[in-house]
Image 1: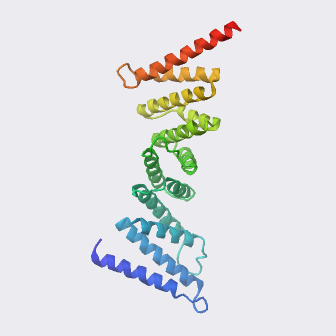
Image 2: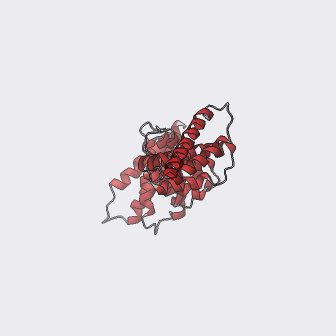
Image 3: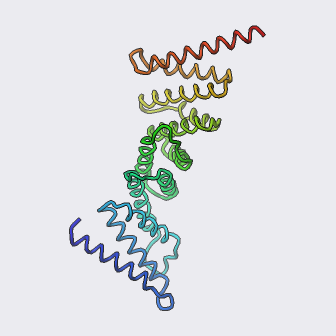
Length: 273
């Protein structure tokens, strides 16, 4: 940023803050303070766009959120303009949260869901959603995704059913949560995504691998014969996608042998009754 531009922005921010602090409702009109907040938010947005500072992002979003709830008459500020800049500021904040060492995935998800409720472009929405996806995938496997993140991924998956990255991360998130809660709803939701068509062969294999983990975990927890059959079926489907040279082929084959032995023992016990 040029020095003159930076100084002009700093001066605009200072003047806007001063106008807000000195506003007297007995003298001025309500639209005066609204305009002061608008110029403050606009200046912060310009500085955010240039310097990418998380503090500017949070304040900018806060002020635009405030402006969306205010009456804009008789000012020349339009609600359409506020909404457009607000969506851009939200998207930038999602990006900023993702590179902050103390990033909060739940806050990112809340922002993404707010973006989905606005009339934002598909490009802007998907970019923000993929930032959330990356943050979730970078988390340790033992850490459960926040409920807000899972719900956000559900909404994004409905909006962008062709995004394999979103779908795979939603399956992964539901898988992690299922291992903790053993919720039938999470299991069914994850499997319904697994069984749909994926554009990329890698995504098909990745989804099938996670289906194996889900089905195997469900049988181990519940011990239901029907769940055993599904686990065996899911493993066979996955093994057809792999070769004996693949790193996980031997491990999955051993898993299949254990399940088939469990099925044999189940039938042997049933036959003696």
